[in-house]
View 1 (cartoon, rainbow, N blue to C red):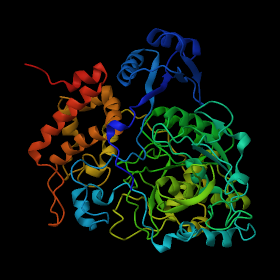
View 2 (view 1 turned 90 degrees about the vertical axis):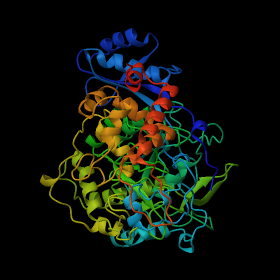
View 3 (view 1 turned 135 degrees about the horizontal axis):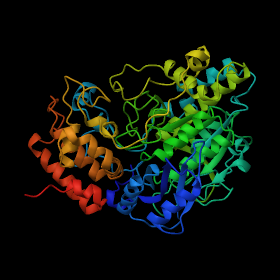
View 4 (view 1 turned 45 degrees about the vertical axis):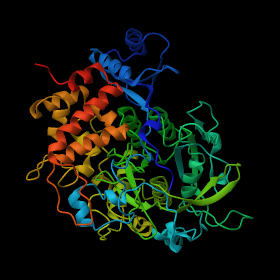
Amino acid sequence: MSDIVTADQYPNPTLDGFFIQMGQGNDIIAVEQIIQQELGAGWNIQPFGDQTGFFDVTKPGSNLAVATAWETTYRLRANASVAFAEPVFTAAVFGRTDWNPPGPPPLARAPLPGPALDALNWGGILDQICMPADDLPASQRDCEWSIQQIRVPEAWATYFPDAHGAAGTNIVVGHPDTGYTLHPEIKDNLLIARGHDFYEPDDDAQDDLIRDGWFPTPGHGTGTASVIISPQGPPPGKTGSFVSGVAGGARLIPYRVSPSVVLPSTLYLAQAIEQAAIDGAQVISISMGGVFAERLHQAILFAQQHGVIVLAAAGNCVRFVVWPAAYDEVIAVAACDAAQQPWAGSSRGSAVDVTAPGAGVWIADVDAQGTPIVRQGSGTSYAVAAVAGLAALWLAYHTRQQDLQGYSANQIPALFSQILHDTCVAQTDPSWSPGDFGAGLVDAVALLAAPLPPPEVITPALVAAGEQGNLATFGHLFEQHLPGPAGLVAAAPVIHPLPDVLAEVLNTAPATLPDHLTQVGQELAFHLATDPTLYWQFAQGLMARSAPPVLPAEVPTLAPAAAAGAEHVAALRSTLLQKGVSAALQSRLTPPTG
């Protein structure tokens, strides 16, 4: 297990730029005038997407503080010509090692009985230690255990009998990650000439294999790509360990969006998603995630309107499903191990759609000397890559059968998502907490065997409302700490403490809370989602107001006493004010005097 890293060792969020949606004066000149007035000169303004009036506003090296970025956003929103504005950040969320709760370490690595943990509503906190699978059972030493678990070889034999492990031919996968290497496991299936580097803008998406700086993940893009496209068995002339990808006949376009998936750029990820759709990808596999951003959401909608199936990792270590996986339009994938038990480090919750192998999966990588190797890795990064491979198999099979001709492009993602859900193998073991791991474990044979419903019953993904930091946002972030059914924030007879705690934080009454959240909710949610210290202060305030569960004697009482709730809220306010927030949020965090 790697050393625990504290919150203050992670870099603070940095501004990528602003997303502006114009309501009036949609020409770029009107936007330039507004930006000149609010931000000054030197900002680049670029329209994007299919919608009129959508603009990226960026300035390399702008160095605006987070609080200043939010204050600027509020001024932009106040402009009569602006329909919506938000700051877009690079922030460390996915894969941080400091998401564990404060206090003493958990008693045991193995999960405790499900009912007790469900009663505590911490989502199995004692088995959610984010750690690699170091002591692997013999079942995980087989290089193809993960594809065997979801019946991929059987699907090859049945539906691609002449492909010799090269199933997925004619399907293109878009792959935003750390870039590619010319690893023998993947090099023949890369579409290098169509790739792009958004991090250091040029047309070479090669992974620089950066091993210094803030939490680099060199070779991550190579590893995730290998789970999708590596042909079956060892490469020619190679012996020893190997990777058999799910769709060894598919091709992959690499997009470099960051040297580290722990610190991804929301803007670069959004731009890569759009570029993949433009470049003709039919599947986009995203093995990273972070905070919500309507800019990112619009990129997802753009891809889906072009018929692209978008899948994303649910998250590693973090206590909620990260974005973009959390968006309804994206297939969110959690991870399990070779024993078909949930992986301890997997994010979980009602936003998860399906689960796939992600602990001790065999992947391609490059060592510190730049030598190609094959090793085992753990994370939802590899689980989502496996399901992206299934999407490529499904598309290849039904395209060959000419089954998809009657469907419009924007129906294809919804069609695949529905069939994927319907063909999962539901898990009855108590360790699979109901509502936390989606429809269950994916099944390649059942997926490909399932008949397609007629086009008239398939509804394309709807354009959901923009993320504004409303009550549902906080319900998602703290779902694992709320009593009652997952995802229900105010359903009788369960009394949910969330509105009361939010109202107390913002010094208002529950009746006026919606208005306050409309104004500053997005900023507050952003801070809670990017700072584990703030997250746990809020979570402890929630749990202090929940009825204490009945626990076995060997399980410590993790929830603080109800009387301590106000102390946690006061600590949260103090930490936020010291951290630095906008003047608008500061005014609501400061209790009235007199």
